[in-house]
Length: 115
Length: 494
Image 1 (cartoon, each protein chain N blue to C red):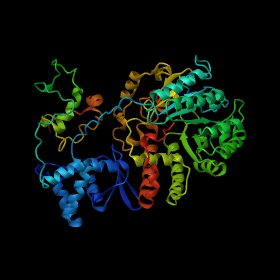
Image 2 (image 1 turned 135 degrees about the vertical axis):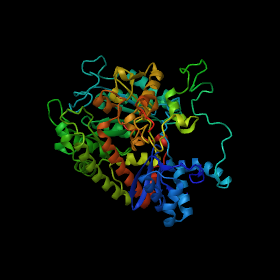
Image 3 (image 1 turned 90 degrees about the horizontal axis):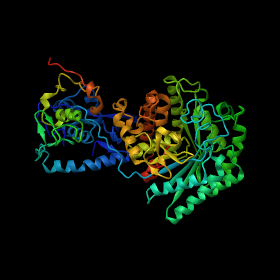
């Protein structure tokens, strides 16, 4: 690193742990990263789907590894249905501001109406 | 992934991540949250961060604004590096913090054994006897003194449940620890023999009010290399305000000569003073000067009294803690000055925080209680820590039945930092973890609550310690090497 200097021990660990990413990027000639070969499955995501929601092996939600409320963020950030949640970029930047912990605070997520 | 490499999306915007900036020796630093990594930033990376703080923007926009000043490639490199440590990143909803419960099995590092719940002093602010007590030690069912048999069972537990490759730490606590010196002494001998048979090491420390430090006790503590912490509040008029005998007489005249005798004789371990600060005795520099310079303690640690807010000795939320912070800052400046010249300074609050910053401890829990540290009450019941000894609601098993691992797992699940919604936006959470369980229980009636009454104080104090850390990193990095140690061996706060 040329512009940042790792000062404490944790910083040195952060630099070391991200080294592999940088090497991979350099091997690609600095171009855009390749698309991942496999679809992204968020942690705790079920591989069994019913329309619109995930289900556990029995068709319910009780047996999911993560509470269903968490999926909202997975859907929003890195998954399949970005259009189903408010447009955080332009119209609703703070819609999750009161929701620090999805499992506990999901009821506090703002309702957003199309403007 | 490179931040600037992926420029195909027209709406892609970069924003700042979570970190706290500070300046020391004319150098800008970032304390990363939640990793607790500390990085020094050069001018270009500072410019990138400052610009993104004003509003999120696309990488091309950033480049256009800063390239004339720094050159295109320099800005690209700086952006990529900042992106790599997550100081900046794509705008996105905040993902829930991963909840990582410590790996099992969780060995005990320190077992705090309350050899008695009785005390020969009657300090008004005491959490064990005062108005905020959790357990009735006067009329309760617990014995007033721990039996030798129970103490031996506690030693067995500590040896059984600690990491076989590491030293087992046993801390004697009270009440006034030395009121049960006979059992303490025999327990040390028993532990040494047991450890030897197992080819293990065992280490001891204790806390005392010093009033019972007879010559034979001092000899024993020195010969056995027992770490000693003295509870003392400062010079006579400060000490005698709260630390009194039951007849109201101050304890300074009894304690001071015995402390001097201890310091003169006990050279095998550094001896520390532990000061309780109250509204009436808030004079940090004067207390420090007396204890460090006049009395000769190796180090002095300060803590505000743990109490319900309505008590007369409680620090006032807001102004009281601001005043405390100002006093701490003044003494910390002396610590820095001494450390730049490689002189020892005994303000242990700074030293402990510097150690945590240096290692980059990112805590999911405020302290080791319930993880590597447990308390034992006089009847052998194991508790969250010594401050909860004997409390049925905070029981974690017993010395004979062992640690209640199911209760421990539930506790750790309920007390994880990710459950403390108020802490989710605080940059100091890697080092604070929501604050002392006992303080929270006394103030809010629940160990799960974050200690919101001293957030500003924690942030202010952490910022000051970060500045000191930065100064030392620039001007005397050799000083910080003393904190490179075996992380597991770092002493836990009591």
